[in-house]
Length: 155
Image 1 (tube, rainbow, N blue to C red):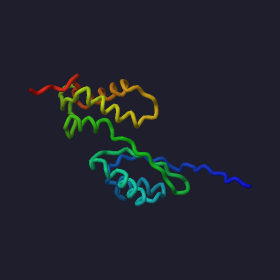
Image 2 (image 1 turned 90 degrees about the horizontal axis):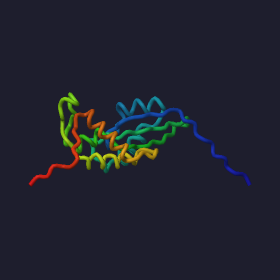
Image 3 (image 1 turned 135 degrees about the vertical axis):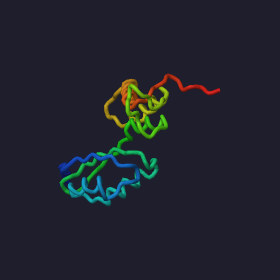
Image 4 (image 1 turned 180 degrees about the vertical axis):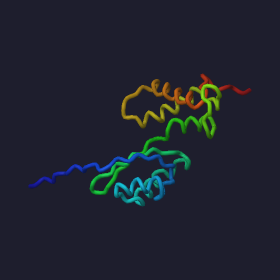
């Protein structure tokens, strides 16, 4: 009776990219980054595009790819950045050019809470939701987006 000993794979590289959902192509930035590590580019592109098919096309997806010395890889997708969710909630394409002086839009505290709940799934650490909300409010401030306590009622 012999037991098969599993040999741990050695990590050759860790690659961090931000790719729009469903739009991984063998060209830059994906191709050169994976090609340097000697990975199969089309395998990654097809798998990534299949996994992100149900996500909105322009959503930027942060990806951390772990390349192993035997030319295999694993990757982890994260949720889009908080700034993306803030722009979506505010209905704007760009943040303010002069945050603090010029307001680009407003969002409600409920939007901030919902964004924090989504972002909390990404974090392995047990960060309280209140701290995440504060961080998102800070991101709003740096983008020139005002956070109001309640959405304005229209009669």
